Image (tube, rainbow, N blue to C red):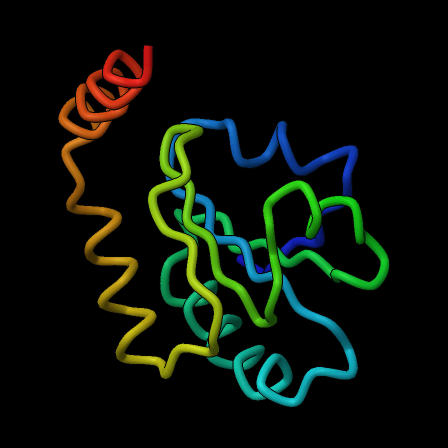
Length: 123
């Protein structure tokens, strides 16, 4: 499955779905983004069951601001609508594969319980 482009209108709907969504925040002028693009594309080919999406931070500046993107590329991983990974920097192929494996291996009931526990401690 090829990568999809996300916009302000499609972002929330896409990342809130069940399953895994990887989002690459990038810009055309960014050298590391251009080097990461084929790695991300290979991952989308290897793992068609995972949504691979890209956000052009120049065209979709409000998304970058909303999600606190201060450096690009920034990679975010969402699973079942929950952000489970957020890191700036281009990953080499093996590191991206490790991230995908880790996200696939998450116990989402445990993740939700930790979020609820954290939120309860904030009040």
